[in-house]
Image 1 (tube, rainbow over the protein chains, first blue to last red):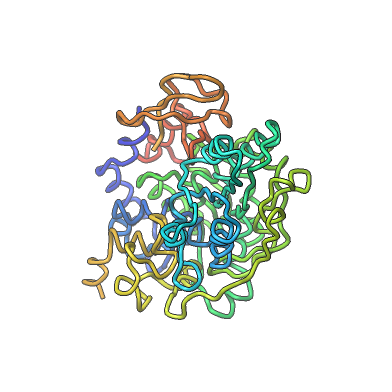
Image 2 (cartoon, rainbow over the protein chains, first blue to last red):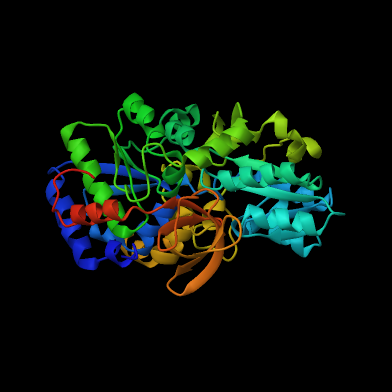
Length: 377
Length: 70
């Protein structure tokens, strides 16, 4: 078993689709949010939407790390490389995220700022070791999957006394964001779709386990089924969600048991707990300020905190008025509802963050579904 | 996609393979992974080791051969 082809089998997909269609109660409409951008991508890429019966509607969630980065944070990252003259190391996905005044890390690099794409936090450490005369900042973004490697980098910098290395920490946490989708005042103002359940993230859950969703499922009376990233995983999760809704249950179930346990990765969680603590509040693109939804570096490791080292003060910046990323990230609108989708805003020249990363809802629609949607419209 | 652990190298690192593409990643977060295991990799770090028994159970679930969740 290579854990790939078996989970993409077309015949089995039709069997599952048939079982979902039979499970769906007549006259009932089911709306499920896939929180994670990896699922959004898989659903679009493998045409899962076409296989599902009309009674099932998949709503895309905010679980795309690049999409939820607010403009002000990108502006600060650009300032680290341009105004402060540091080597800014970043994951490739953030390079094209729109910043203020039509800038981006890519454009800042073209203008002479020392911005370098890295594959992992360990690469940023290596650059710091190789360039002792330069300041090196790692632009740390992402959910619970990318946080443990950042913790390892900080601990390694501490162990080896790497004084020219620091981290601009923008790590966010999943459970707070899921809860926010259902209860934040902004969501009440701008509106959101009623949801019947959630497809829980695959890789995030490898790290945090299934346990953190239990409070959420009980408190909000919404079923959660954690699913793998293959198309059959997503379809099986939908089937399990339909069964829960029909039976009036709201439990956490784990379709991705081959990789996710209830406890998650204890080693990774311990490293994160050693280095990071919760921020009181953090701004998300699309969700606004979300309490206790992001991490900062503990005082104990404060000398590796770029926000302290460079005195970065956060300045919020409003999104482009034409951009619907905010509503799309909450599931309140679909990519094709946005006026600039596929016209002014494309993956080659993104106006909004959802068009940047392959995990963004707009990029997934643009790449795999825009012609079908045009015909349907 | 999951990667096959081909060979452990110095320290926490290992060579992994996915359909012929090989690269070096860290097993620091999954130290129990052995050569021949499949792991899920994120930004250069393995974050989970796949359990073949659970995978078979899930495949059986797809085929409708089990009535409840694994």
